[in-house]
Length: 238
Image 1 (tube, helix red, strand yellow):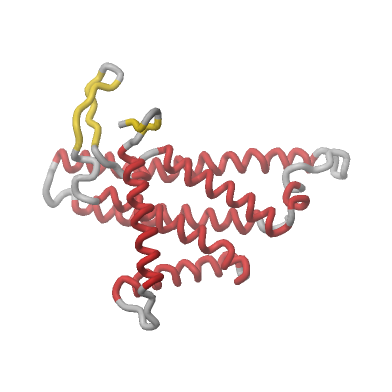
Image 2 (image 1 turned 30 degrees about the vertical axis):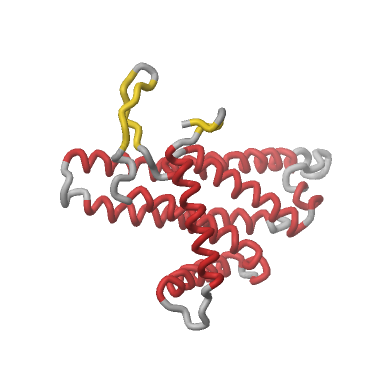
């Protein structure tokens, strides 16, 4: 489906839906924030408090924690919802057959956003670019640029320049590793579930559903924690 020349994919629709759910949920919780939490508010506060303790444990600095926490928590919540939504009945299994490059392929109406490399690459780029801004705001433009661009005639000669080039390459490598780690795990899980459901529709796929719940949680936590570590590294002068 296209709007003008802009393609509307099944994963794009789910990405927008998850974003809307998070925004509406945040607005509702903010409006109905009770001093004694109950139900859904209690669950959200439990998750956020756990994340806050994790961030505190990595930074060791409450000021940095409060700066990093909003982005880290948002990434965790968005990614875990994107991962777990693949377990919704009908997601990835209801669709139509279409001709693609001369072959008939099955195209589901909706899919998990994390099973689309475009989405995982977009989050990875956001995380890495945010780390650059965190570094600049924490130690200043000059000191942060000094991590990448070093005077080649300063002892030890050219070593600092070589290390700086490696640092630049590593920043781009983070985007690639981030993207493919999340995409590979969730896409593989999606394929595994489809295969098991096509072979045996009842009972046998249940253990694999619980496995995907666990994998989805771990991948979201790893993505968020690596983002936090990159933020912390960027905020240090050396």
